[in-house]
Length: 114
Length: 115
Image (cartoon, rainbow over all chains, first blue to last red):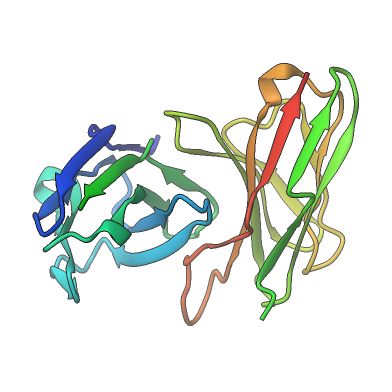
């Protein structure tokens, strides 16, 4: 069975602080994909990144970076110099190679205060 | 660019009533799915489809029915609404091959309240 755990229910930071959102996943399959999605207060769900199980390179996109470690089954998301616009609920998700099912974590609500 | 369109955005039902949430996508995606979002529980998969005429159950299928007669449309039917089905529902689609594989495109959500 597949499972995604986001242990941090809610995080509050002050603007310009760095923040890391944790994601731990469980699967016995060797081919899988990991994702992060953002849900701002307006409610829509926005894709941020996809990573496959064979690519452990960290990725950086502007102030966002992702750290994928198979050894610890983690796919953590770091926001550098956070901004108020980063306030949202962030979901980590897992899918197997065939993309039949997507398994989402319970989400982490990030509050960035000015 | 319409993307994924869900209707209605809001609906109030009485226990026992039935209704259909509509979902349409114009991206020619093979894969479509329905999720429900409840506080503290993330998104849970209700049903999914990998192509016209093919549907399967997700994590929480009970009380819901789906069909996929065309590539574009994937309606979700509540057969006899219960208060436990009060939730926000999201439809999502994606490609299973090629560019942007697995990147889910979501509709705006439908907030359903069952009294």
